[in-house]
Length: 251
View 1 (cartoon, rainbow, N blue to C red):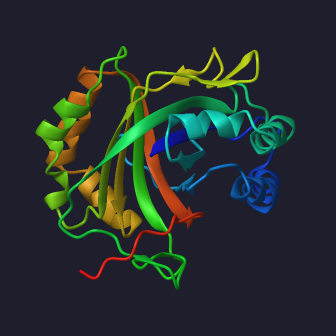
View 2: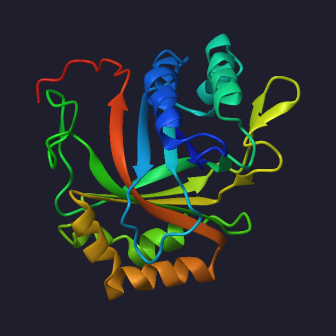
């Protein structure tokens, strides 16, 4: 699948309470009916941040389509235009609100104890409310594909049982065309080259892991190969919208 990750700041002139009322009560409802979306997750920064946090990110919104063509079709459909229009008039879509965007193909790396999603709970089983803690980071690598290097160097981070999911995504290297003149991200916004996600059952587990030498080495080497590295710790809510039926198998 193709992931579209919106790196968001709190819009200037809007209180958090006003923004959240619109975002959770209106905007996400439009997203649920947007053409071709398979899954989405909304992530809100937590108050205690690790030493690696940078960029003052407020939220990261993640949306997923089957492939590039489905992604482009969506943003050039009526439902895609409605979603963009709602964002434009209620929060603005300039660099004061959208720091940048990552359009990525993500690799799910092995972990010793994967997070378990409960369809009854509508979220993950580590917390009563079904949310999960995520460390998320983005960076520029001059267009270089860091995927093979990262997987061969740090693919075993998930052997630590505190890490419940380990994802590294690399950019498709293209901006999504919208109409005749627009694009996602816009020309003055960053198109990030990579995405890192590490999931944990609690903020304490995340902060403990991120403060240890194993992860500090990861962060240092990513920084040496990248610029404009940003990231933070977030509380994540997951929504699965469409599950295409699979053919029956007996085994």
